[in-house]
Amino acid sequence: MIEELHAQILEAVDFTAIDKFQNLIEKTITRAVISGEDNPDITSVSFKFGDFLAGITPFANSKGKENAYDVGSQTILAVTNALQFELDEGEAFLLFHLRSLGKFRKKEAELLKELKGLWGQWPDYQMEEREFSRALKGLMRDKFIQYRKGSIHLNPSFVIRYRS
Image (tube, rainbow, N blue to C red; front, side):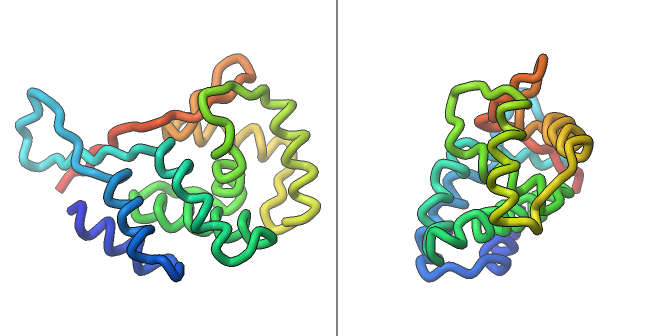
């Protein structure tokens, strides 16, 4: 199952240093070892989301810094689609923007203000305020971010379980 995920992601992206990107994918998407789990019908996959976001920047910049947000967002979409998450382009753009957040928390209003400036350059990813709030709650349910009391923090890694 893991090999198919890696192959699906690699087919969906277009980078010149595909071997280095493959290394990043193999380090961040692995089989999760969970003690006490003995059900052969369930496959557990560990996704080190923080490491993935930290490593994606050079690949996003490979087609020029002016295209980094577009390339990075499309790469996130390719990975999340392979992992069977349904994200739209605006949510992927939001996650790509949050990659530099690190261990710090960010307030929703502050993030929205930053994004409004970026949406002027990339209007394809623009969201209305209500849509933005819904996107944050969706990303929280999917475990990409931790979102409490208007404060946002990236979830560094999580386990996804698939039934065979």
